Image (cartoon, rainbow, N blue to C red):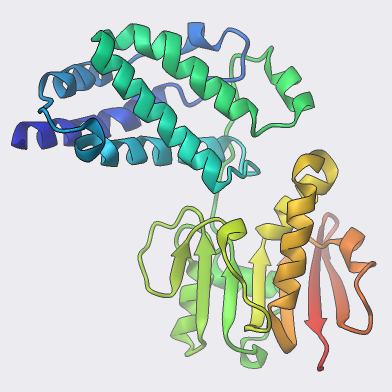
Length: 307
């Protein structure tokens, strides 16, 4: 048993290495299986894991590594396209691909063939379902993809950009897409403000933070005094409006839920702005304020009127 867990630990490091080696490779490229590399260390770790198996069911022993591999792949996909929004069912399907890959390896004993003929084609098909058809067509002819460079904004910069006076904030506060380190949430709590954050890729573990997709978060009607989303939810909503109508309806429904989660007199601060939504809000229920911080940055504030 100890040998199995040693092999699992070694495999985690090699999974990261293997994913990083193929980070710039495009899984939607029409010849994607021909460009994927297989790191010798990764192959050796898989071989060791196969040889150290016990008679226990694979899911009991290796379920953790399956979830780990899926999470690590998602991190890298988000760094390429942050607008990808796999639902819970799609995440479970991704884990199932890894589970089935392992089962095929056990059955055939052939690691390279399993990766080339089953695993990568399955990942390619899974990923295609997350992209609009017109994007898929373009990506078919590109062997490489770029990467988004993330930098979590400081709390002070976010407050300045959004025009937030912390002394006037209604509580509780929720930061939607708070970032891996939840800098704004932590800053507000240090001021004695009851603040919370949600993000799908948290790297800090605190009871006031929730690691999940905003589509999976229940905002609860009338709960929040202040909502904040800097280059988060509304950025994705704008993208869906402009480029991916297949996701637009669920974004609009979530926006409705977000606004209804404001308490009377509560405010939603966000960037970028949403003119196509703001102009359609009921003036009897909401007040909209806009400000232009630069040529291309429009920020918004929606106030839920007193009942």
